[in-house]
Length: 332
Ligand code: ATP
Image (cartoon, rainbow, N blue to C red; front, top):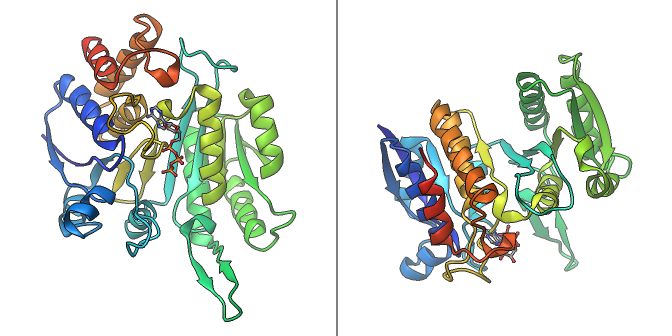
């Protein structure tokens, strides 16, 4: 039996988490779900943003499936998501972006993975007010964090027979921090002589991605650029409802979709649960349940491609419940 921490989160989080839990249970995997919650709703109900039992559960189970969490302004944290990534040193944010057959999008056969440094850089939100009333944000880039994310990307490329890793930066302008990150990636690349290192400046990368995304296989970049490129890449394959993710540390891993809490559609049974369901397949692969992971991915594919059960974001009419039931029916 697996003990897994489930954090439903806010907005569409509870809906997509419940759907994902049902899909995993339908595979017959023996899971003891330990459900704890944090974020906006918990704060409104209890005055506490992250109850202690959340930390205890994460530290005990080490494997977490998480919905999007909203951090209310003025609650003492800039972001609970960032805090969890830093606290548990979940340094590697892995986001596979893949075209799914049956999804109407401009490009076909996109198959790339973004490796986003997850603990530092501008996205870490270290900011301060200066005596003259201006504000500054601190972009700290360390050797330790840069080397290990580069290693994650190259190791993935090696294991998956990828020929090229693309490092994305702005070192021509932001010379010290981005330049240092770039040099760390170059250093790591020397240990992988069979894999090409391609260096692309972030603005050019945005253009390249919307013109010819199929040229990319593995992308490695800093925290904020990784955040932006993830949404851009999601748009290339049909939207945020489809793209999964994992926050990987040495001992603890948190699996969550790229999307946020989508307050515009929350509570309406409209959310597409596929992004979190595919995140859960990444989780099953991580714990060694590769067969079950494959069953889930195949069930999702069949639901979209053959059954044509699609939520609104994919141009269909199915509700969260209907698409979940269709996926469960395809689990054999
Ligand atoms: P955050 O800042 O928390 O990352 P965001 O600003 O990126 O959030 P999202 O909450 O991800 O925004 O939503 C962006 C848009 O995508 C919204 O219109 C939302 O409805 C849509 N969206 C996001 N996730 C889904 C989903 N799972 N199913 C359908 N639509 C979604």
